[in-house]
Length: 318
Ligand code: NAI
Image 1 (tube, helix red, strand yellow):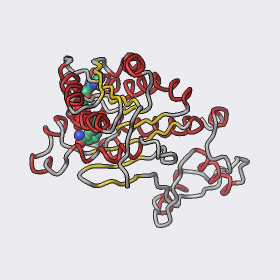
Image 2: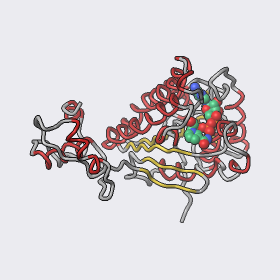
Image 3: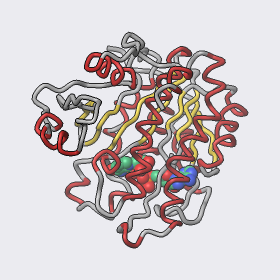
Image 4: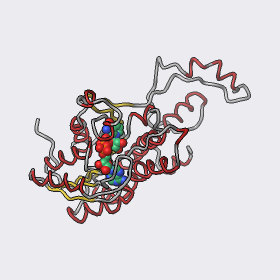
């Protein structure tokens, strides 16, 4: 099997001055891509800034014979990052929204600043970069996006309400990008990685981190953003330590209750076993699934054949 190459493509990696981002950038640089190495160069808590982190990685890529330029903007300024790609290389093909910070603190002690900073970097930052890349992707009918979630977002994690909320948002964001992008050959997927980095160094012992090299996350990302991937979009992937698995939503059997005055708290409690019955699960992938389920159950006039609702269809469901 020949290796996956990215010649003549431009890949933007945010937060590429260290950790996972650095590994992505080095990889794409070694596989023929023009790489924009973005990094604000601050602390893991989002304080300060420096051009050094991005410069070091650009140097590494160039010394190895690759093509790369640095960008030092915060992801909150996504236009400037995508502009760096357009000005230097004339195009953008792949966006890896990877930049991130932590402001871990128990919910009891959470301050607005901890909440807001996490949201600005993870949610607003990912939005701004994707929003700036989007017109280019649509125009050229080609684009690949990776957003970065976390097990903390999918499952919750003590002391990380801010980070968990921001990270699960990447799932909804990605799934809608995948739906809106499909017509334009824009593919978007979300990963929940686990890897040794300065972020995890504070919470995991060295012997565990040894099993979680960040370079082991890179091959999955390469597969998902390569031009040969024309169908895997809107996926959620758990990846780290050599393990790669897709995750999805699972719906229990559920209770079907009459929609009349008999629908009371007691009637739900009486069916609690059905609400929790995962013995024959279904795997919903869009709002249309829910409407068809209701139609089946209650004879509503939804259109169950509509796989992805367009904007007008969506309004009816809000
Ligand atoms: P890291 O701290 O080593 O790297 C993050 C990079 O993002 C840093 O170089 C930092 O300077 C940069 N950055 C931070 N704020 C920025 C901003 N506003 N604009 C531009 N750059 C900024 O962390 P790591 O572990 O490599 O994390 C990468 C991504 O993976 C993050 O989104 C993180 O939340 C996510 N993640 C990592 C996990 C892990 O096990 N390492 C687990 C789950 C998610």
